[in-house]
Image (cartoon, rainbow, N blue to C red; front, top):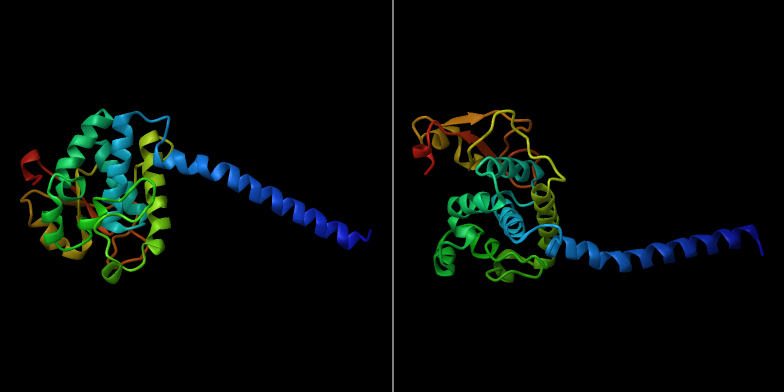
Length: 216
């Protein structure tokens, strides 16, 4: 047998082994994202809501995901407390508002609130308006995976040196964001503020509030 043929056989064996490993472990990895067994019920609920809100606010922006996670973790000592704050802060995506109210609002809330842990197309996603779900599915899985890592503690959420208390879209502009509270302040963090999809950076301002009364 020639040396070239032996090399080809070894390559084929290696590829077959790698493919078998993917088939073996992919369901396990997927299950860890869909229903992480090492998280309790409150942590799983928090991770799913954190993922939904992050995807709604800035799609697959890792910087925005870290910002929102840092804000949420500063809003309570437990996953249950953090979930409660986040649920009322983002009432459309969290489901506090009805689906009919979500349909009446502009933006992605009508489907972002229904993003599924198993990655299937969410209710409210319309192909003629939103495109093929398959194009967004992998991005959603990645966002949810990072949310699970934040809640589990495998990923650090510290993009701002000073603790922000809420966020607001850069598309509104600094003056409009600051005008929403008389004593609001926009923090400068370790990523630039940007406007426009698929640009690297923060698509939401990190905002600190002088008092709870400003947080409306």
